[in-house]
Amino acid sequence: MTDFSSYFLMNAEDAAEYSKIQLNYFSPDADLEQTEIGDGNLNYIFRIRDRKTGKSVVIKQAGHTARISDEFKVSPDRNRIEYEKLKMENELVPGLVPLVYHYNEVMNCLAMEDLSDHVIMRNELCEHKIFPRFADHISTYMANTLLLISDAVIDHKKKKEIVNRFINPDLCEITEDLVYTEPFNDINKRNNVFPPNSDFISREIYSDKKLLLETAKMKFDFMCNAQSLIHGDLHTGSIFVTRDSTKIIDPEFAFFGPAGYDIGNIIANLIFAWANAETTMEDETARKEYTRWLEETIIDVLNMFVSKWKELWKERVSEVSATYEGFDTWYLGRILRDTAGVTGLELCRRIIGIAQVKDITSIASTEKRLRAERLCLRTAKRCIFERDTITTPEQYLNIVRWAAEK
Ligand SMILES: Nc1ncnc2c1ncn2[C@@H]1O[C@H](COP(=O)(O)OP(=O)(O)OP(=O)(O)O)[C@@H](O)[C@H]1O
Ligand SMILES: [Mg+2]
Image 1 (cartoon, rainbow, N blue to C red):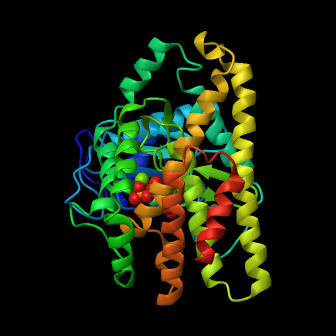
Image 2 (cartoon, rainbow, N blue to C red):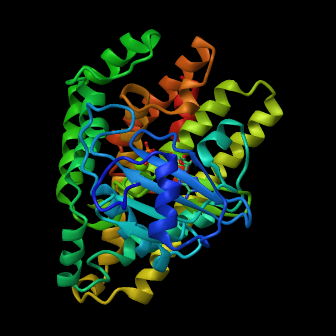
């Protein structure tokens, strides 16, 4: 049996052995059971549980390529980045992320709290379930993580040190390609267009030169604006929920980028849930009730984010130039502009690009799926073109409703 002194990809039995030898988490007489529970694209996730005590832990290991395909070469250093980001988040937003216990740079694996009592939010939204605490939790998560790890609060030299630790070239390249580039030009022929929507996408997206120009501007902003330490992949598949609890997982894409990237991802993914409900729920009363909850959630997420951000700004910002009158409003305005733009990008890339979302792909009827896809794409274009003037949640909802009527 290995002593884990050199790297190899573990199976579930190896992970159990690892937890015994390396973690000091279970007692020596533990009766362990182990399962690979990962269903993601990139990494291997193992749950190890002591049958005697019920105590359990989750181990996440990164390979040198993606779990789903050897074609994607991705540095396993992403596991260190995920660990370091989770450690910071445990300080900034305790209770909203899994506890992390351990990281091993040889094995490229981390150990964290087992959240098996939670469920992935996207799956629940597809079942049209409601999460009353979500807006409060996610707005706290975003306001704290995005403001408190930025130049507005942290000493600039210290911030540059942190930037250094979060240089994340491989994962940024994935975002640059899959979010900012390929959905708009299919340059690598990896897009995954729903065939009945192919003409619409060629006409409305690939052929729209004005749209291409706007995506280029936003891509350069993503690459050049080291504003905040962002999660980088904050969609509803990276969020674990119960009715009362929210846990944000999987921050392996973390790096210093535009704060609006995380917020826009949340808004877009709530819009996917809205599009699913709007097109698939037959019962009118239930549909109206559920879409209204999603609309209220979009309103609360943005409004609560803004008010929490403003409060924190008053309490925590010490950078001298940032305290000049009017700067706070200007700075937040830029973030809200980026939020609208990224909402549009995420809406496009999940419909057109390689990585899609169940909210849309699970819609069985061709006619309903087409309606949902076009609703998202029409919303996306307006969010991108009008991003300079979209500042309130009601504006998003007006656009979504307009797109649903088309
Ligand atoms: N701490 C945890 N407790 C329980 N289950 C977990 C935990 N972390 C991850 N999982 C399970 O493993 C799945 C994949 O996790 P995660 O999204 O972190 O993996 P990934 O390989 O990075 O996926 P992606 O392709 O989305 O990047 C989750 O959807 C969840 O079901
Ligand atoms: Mg991941």
